[in-house]
Length: 340
Image (cartoon, rainbow, N blue to C red; front, side, top):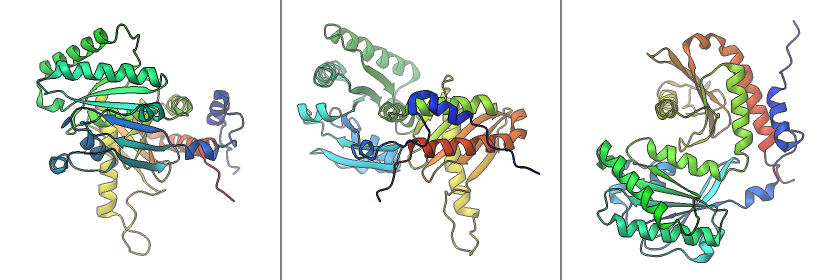
């Protein structure tokens, strides 16, 4: 029997987004210039714990023993060619210099949602946003209204609304609106979802990734698709359909389930301890709400996790075929050429 040739729909999507032939790689110089993310905020707002929990897999309990940051600390995040940047954790006792603001692609400002001096802190935040925008208009600014786990649902809404209105009022004269607010906590998925939004803004190929996932969703008849960084559980892209936080939580948790089960029950051919995540990683989980979760390895550090209806799960062969095409397109479009 003659093998069916893979359909070129993902290749066509990539070419249609201005990348020409899919064999044209991203230049190595674009990866060497890693974008910088500056984390700022008042003392004890939880700036360092935000980074440690997301990118160093620190448990929330362990963050209680972190020492206060006394000077800027640089951290490199280099999980994959699609996911490379530098984080600068700035102490709350200092203001970032003009040079720091000019050189950073993104600013994450962390506020303590339970701080009683919110008015003064929000005023300082508005000054920082206005200054950052003046020095670097292209900078992305995200405000984490952090430690929201200590508030009731009504209090969360009130604090969020108050900070949002105060910022809009303070920044009305500066015509600055390029910032986004997020309610976050290290005890749930809100922090990871917010950090995902931060990371996505500094990935120049985001539009291509979203288009590829849109094509995958349409051709495979799945409800939602995420491209996850396995190490941090930050999703670097998703399709253009509305994001349901519960769907994100389920898909993110599936990564932990697959890795944990692989560590406990996996056995390599030689009887040695297998890798927790490799090119054979694939799993399906049936939920009790007539939906199915599907995970498939995309690269050493990336995983595709899909949410689909149970009646679509019988087409796993079709989905596997389309995922294989997705992997090929990602490699061809985004692979950095090796130095000879």
